[in-house]
Figure (tube, rainbow, N blue to C red):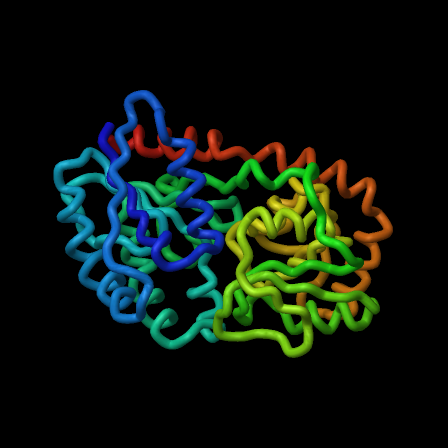
Length: 322
């Protein structure tokens, strides 16, 4: 089976979408009977992004895949028509649920594309059951065409290894409004805890925390291991990879009580009301108090998610339409 895989997200971001693409490609490498051809266009600049979001996805990408058996689009951006069957991965529907949290271009172009592309795809791969329900309800994709294909984490996220010094709470995420960082900052202040933040510069931030910017995975794992807990009470997620990364490092997790992150965490995290800083602060205190028990629960939970499992589920979806 010859499969063209859109790897354009790797030129745009190092966040969750790029982690998904890299993890999937790594697990597909060497799979018998699967010949993967990476497809991409442009660089990381604004003009390249505009050209990619328009001409590339609607014309260039289906043309590049015309001699292949399957086209796999790793984000919601893809063609409206294709000469070969194609799948599209939906990581979340924040653009539809909360358009006000995004810059104008992203909001406008994304909302115009996401529904038509998902409905045109032969199969939609949703990264969680929560995102599957959202895809059916908000985009009108028939449930029988949606498959749940989740995420996993890199092998370097383990409890063994160096840990950062100090007593602090860690927050991980691009500086954007839906990450709820201002309430995290307020919760840490209420709880009397130092907050350290890791993430790329986005379009929203916080005022007085220790922002470390983007770091490589070795440093991120070191920060997870040293943290009292991870604070991840996002307003909206399709999955929430930092939840798994922290658990795999033996770090207790505090996350939102509804939505995808609660699904991913199961009973291995402290769940809070993301709209209430007092609730988040109480969750931080509880996670620290229950550190030993949450460590064991989290390690077991993180072990349920593997990139080989993601690759198996993705291949199964391709085989349905080949």
